[in-house]
Every structure is written in structure tokens, then in C-alpha cells.
Length: 278
Image (tube, rainbow, N blue to C red; front, top):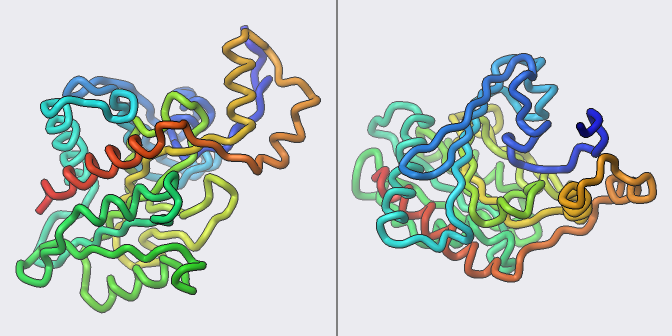
């Protein structure tokens, strides 16, 4: 049996990968099941103790795993989009006459960070001609706009009286098996850039004034994660001390060679699921 904590904690945005989603952690509820043919993990952080242990705010985290790079047939795509739409409906506040703001976070010029912008391009804005419709915002990154996305989102929410925000962004995973085939939904908001140690202002209820549902797709892993994954697959029980500097630096992030197709198809699936809300 591998000694406890023999491998370092690897940076990841996926709640189900934090501490390997150990079901014995106090203040958390964790379960795995299958819905519509897709594996789902549900993690609920119910206390400050659980939030500290997991490293995530109190709330609900749902993770759906799809076939690699979303190479699904039309039936699977329809079922996957309907599944995500159902989860979004459950996480959002009850619909009323106010619009929902859809925010595509990230940099459209960088493939691994383009999930958000590619998604919002495929979502029609409807709030200008129907009650309870959709607002769509693609704020870009700070070096493009000169301001934090959270500030822009807060301004739109306040000016147009949005009821809630759905924020789509690329994530960092621990396992390469989750790249471009995993969708995480959370009712706790999101901190852009935190997975690669470049955190910006958080988008959550406290900063924008309304519930923020985060939809994330992992597109990168760190070099540390690659080393740990290789050692684990080779049957190693410990992380060699010579590699500990990787954990401290953790400055190299990589994507699979098929990331273009993965990001494109991921954005298509998420956009399709959000259009089902309209």
C-alpha cells in the first residue's frame, strides 16, 4: 500500500481530484454514479473544515466525464447537452423575468484557454427581446481589456439586473485522462487563472452580487502532474526528493496535441447545453 502523502498534492482545479476526493474527509459528501450513460462524481463541501481540507469553497461540485475529446455521435451529444442543462437548471436560482449572464472567460488567441470565448460565440443573446433571456459577455483577459473580468461582469450584472451568472473557463487538471473530456459544474463561482498560479479577481456571489455557476473544462496539466502520473503508473511508492523542485516551481503546463479539436468540441457541447436553458 502506498504510504499516505507519499506523493505531493498536485495543483488542480477539479474538486474531485483534490485529495483524490477521499470520502472520509470531514465536512464533505462524495459519491459516484452514472447518468445518461456518463460517469458523474458529486462532491458537496458542507463545512469550513471540509473546505480547508479540499481547498475549495463550501458548495456543490459536479463532474461529468465524456468520451475522449468529445468524439460522440449525435445521440450522445444530445444526451450530454441535456444532462449538463439539467445540472445547470438545478444549480441556478429559480428563473424569473431577469436575464442570465453567460460569461466566456479566457483568451481566444490561446487554444488551451479559448473554451470560454468559443462557447459564447455560439450562444445567441436573447435578453433584448424576451424576458428572462440570455446576456452574453466575452471580457477577454486583463492584458487585452485593461481591467479585471470580475469588474466588467459586476458592471453588467448591476446595470442590466441579471439574476445569475454562468461563467465558462478552461481549467488545470491533475490527470491527463481528464483533459478535454471532463466538465465541472460548481455553484461557488471561479477564480480565473488560479490553476496555473496566475489568479485574477474571483467571480462569485460576493464580488458580482448574484449567484455564479462555474462551468470548467480542463485543458492543461502541469509538468509535476506528468511526472507523478508516470511514477504512479510505473508502480512507484514515493516521489523522489530530486523532483521536489518541480512542485515548488510548477511553471510548465502542457496540453495534448489534439487540443484544438478537444476545445472546439467542448465549446460546442457547452453552448448547446446553455441554449437548452433559453
